[in-house]
Image 1 (cartoon, rainbow, N blue to C red):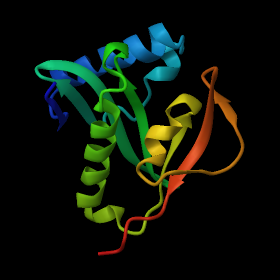
Image 2 (cartoon, rainbow, N blue to C red; image 1 turned 30 degrees about the vertical axis):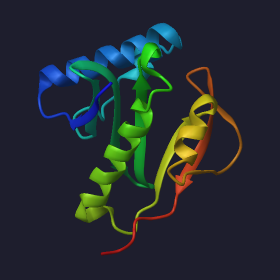
Image 3 (cartoon, helix red, strand yellow; image 1 turned 45 degrees about the horizontal axis):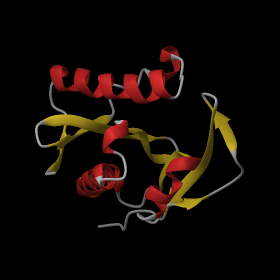
Length: 149
């Protein structure tokens, strides 16, 4: 299975990413659609993962007052455990590293308990108590700041 990850640059591809999120978060995890889609869709840097030519995963990142937040990572069930999540996180972190305004900022995310192992592979560590977001157990996870260039 050939994996690739691309930064989303058009509305059609963004809709494909939304369909993945709909399948994973809304259908599978019962997240309210009002909670899934937000006012940051346009400003966030969005990514889509492919297995061959099929869209199989997505994720995004954005600047916040607290640093840089990774969000909305979703992989279709048949493709989990096959490196898609790792490819997405790597592509997002590489993109952040290439962004001049990222230097010195903390990178963080709200990691679902079941996905913490993925994020730990990239140096994220649990920070703070367990909390529930959209009915799902999460931990705040942080990674050391990007080096200043």
